[in-house]
Length: 490
Image (cartoon, rainbow, N blue to C red; front, side, top):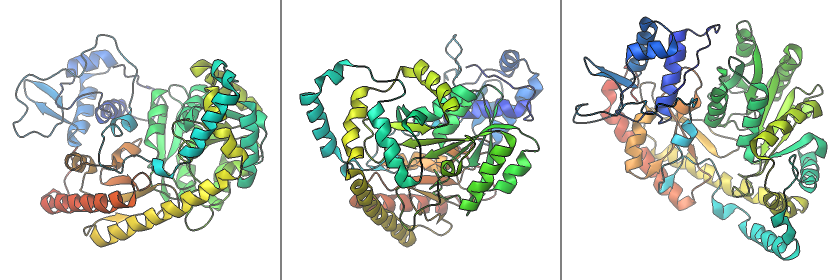
């Protein structure tokens, strides 16, 4: 473990240490029950006073992420019935330090379950797998040489041409020269971070935001600052106030059916954000995984469609709507920015596999992509409506949720004193998984939310799984009333 402290940051050192340790605990790097280094050892490793370390541990203990035993040490919190007796594993067994910060996305997406509400992806039965298989067979028969060729690092030219044509339907007018094909949208976030973010740089996100994006920005040593949202998305007034203290290098936003909340940034706010970027010189990374999956009305125009100064990098993933197995995403940026991203892509993997790019090409070049999206909208709207109906019938008092107008997710809130990390342990015993909301907060965490994805399970599993989840929530709330007003438990 290597913790780098930013001594010129506005964030106190104790809070930085607390955040670094909390990230690693919640990512599973420190096993439950393992022993943290002593106060003296941490102070020496971090070149801070023992008082600073004690303050950080106090914050962790207040959140119940650790427990301290006089004369024995500080241990990562675990629920046990037999106390913390016995030999405990040290949290730092390796002599070689690593620079890992957090990977909560990985930690919370490893548990298989019959009722999988954690995976924000599409039921494989709804994807055009037959067409993809036919495309592979056609390529194997007629273009087998593709198997022996590297593709262009920027991406296959035919695919980039098809993407540029497809984007005109989204009022995004671009050229193949402004497109970089990536290994999914997650790599796109990583390439932007590698190119433009370094230790101490400020990244602004919505609060809450996509957990795997936080993981990437933290890995670059960024100071991640979040801005709350309301019914119009990111609050620009709060962002403006924040600019008195911080100078951001990048604002990361999912303006359309935001992950995890499903909120939509209004057109007015999109324009205001773009004006701020142009005025102050920061970049906007506009992440758009599923704007085509709308249920009630088409969303506002993309921020990139209004960008005339090159302030916006637009990121799109095709995995969720076409083929997770092909892992195709892409970035659009002005050429001077894109050239730097291509260098980062070169260093990362020398380009996407050519076969994967050619496999999805026929779907993009034909009208099949339009029919695929129509079918997805229709089916997922039914699943969204069924989920809302089931929650309305079975969710206990004190439970609320945001009605998503598109996308795959539904954001559920329990009473303020509740803790969905704690509830998850019971849910997993009943074959139910979800994403605890705490993983979506880059700063001070809120513990009483959870995200469920209704897109991955069929209607039968939705009915049974939502019933099981509501019963679990009801039992948890009913048996934990005395916890009101107490600090959340991990």
